[in-house]
Amino acid sequence: MFQQGVSVYMFLAAVFDLNRIIVYATRFTDEIFALLISAIFIINALGNPFGDTGLYHYFKEDHKSHAYYASDPDYNHLSVALLSTFLCIGTVQVAASLKRTKFTSYYPTQGIRNTITDFSVVLAIALWTFVDKVVFPTIKTESLNVPAGFNPTYACCYDDCSLGNFPDDCPDLDKEAGFRPWLVDLTDLGGKPWLPFMAAGPALLAFILVFLDDGITWHLINHPSHKITHGAAYNWDTVVIGIMTLVNSLLGLPWLVAATVRSLNHVHALAEKTPDGKIQSVLETRLTHLGIHVLVLASIFALDLLKVIPMPVLYGVFLFMGIVSLGTNSFYNRFTMFFMQPEKYPMEPYTQYVKPSKMHLFTIIQLVLFVTLYVVKTIKAIAIAFPIVIALCIPVRVYVLTKIFTKEELIMIDSDEETIKRYLEKNEATPPEEEVSEKEKDIEKQDDDAAKENEDQVSGLPPLNMRRQPRKRSNFHKSLSAPQHSQANALFFGKVHDMPANEAEPLVQQELERRQRVRQESDPHMLLAEAERMISKDYRFG
Image (cartoon, rainbow, N blue to C red; front, top):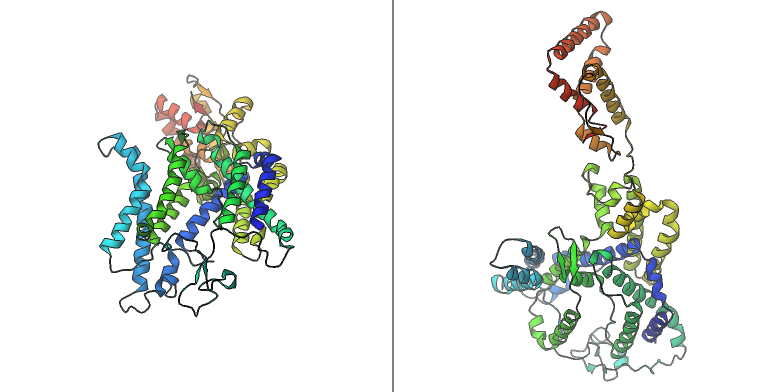
């Protein structure tokens, strides 16, 4: 009754248009959830510390994949682990390299390059499966666990399946007595008529998870940067998910839910992109979805072929999909800026128009929620609260962040490109002043003093075509300015500062006379160049 309760909640959500709540799920919420799914893909491929999946666990001698060959004296689990690592990383590298083929000059025609790009993952799987089975046939890597036939996977210890699941509940038996029926008997409540009512509470939490998973995935897919022109159908999709949840529950199958990473990769596969990865257009068609599910159906008749694919190659596919989905996630991009030199930040609205301290604070808040989600998901005792934490991201963005950040800062960090562009055109926002350290202020003051010394020399020269510009970054001005003159002054006078007066005075007099001779002997155009260098820290030349 738990699954049926989820379906009922989904139907009610569509009837009362609860999807309008998704409007409040901005990039703040979307990208936390998307990064969580990407992290799950990546961590499960490399080695889940809370489970037994991933490459890392092949290095453990007691891993379940090594148990079958425990009696083979020639079997070495370290050889298997090293080859598995090689297969996984190789799959990622080949898939990533072939994915860039479209923008290279190799191969005779653009059509061939496009085909290689479109089938890059399939080609990588085929190549590294060949390497595993043909080049290293004696090393027994783990293969995909596929059932022997087309039947329910729940095996029964006895004819009455309610008496136990084979082999967990009956390890003394050598063979299962049969499999459960295809249809689940909804009337079998085990003598507990109150069960449907008690299941309503947990079903509500499951509904929140499925509803937000589906809604946030749709929200990510329909992001303006994807250039999708067809309208969204949130409520209709909610109804379809509710129907399929009910049907799959009757058959004892996994639920049909939105697959965030795969859905985003599907959009990118249908997109025309620039070499730097920006989407120009997306081919919006239902044929690809139909083809995908027809192939999934056909795989039932190719179980023996699926058994050939090594699990490390599939881990490579998961790792590749997780890494690829990170590229368009601005939360992840801002997280990497914690480890960057500030002058090297990419040119984005949140680096140009938002102070670094406020940008990093926004990222830290997202990071706290991201870590909380992952911890709650991982600890089974509190995993039931996972949907609640996801739902809390929306009110945090709507009610909390608006108290911490200004409207302009939230637009620059948490809006799409078109919204930011319209805001800039309407308000003519200017980049903020950066905080300047005391040392930088001292250097700039010395530059100003040095420029003042040269006023007399340049007063008779033609005026320069100059225009004052809004200040962007102190490091930008330092890259243009020439503080060598003022630094030389500081170095010289710092050296003589602590000298006795009778020793320092002759040195100072000699230095002043030397500089006077240099100025008298300099050509006018050299004086002009010196003056330009002195004032370039505050001006640009038109």
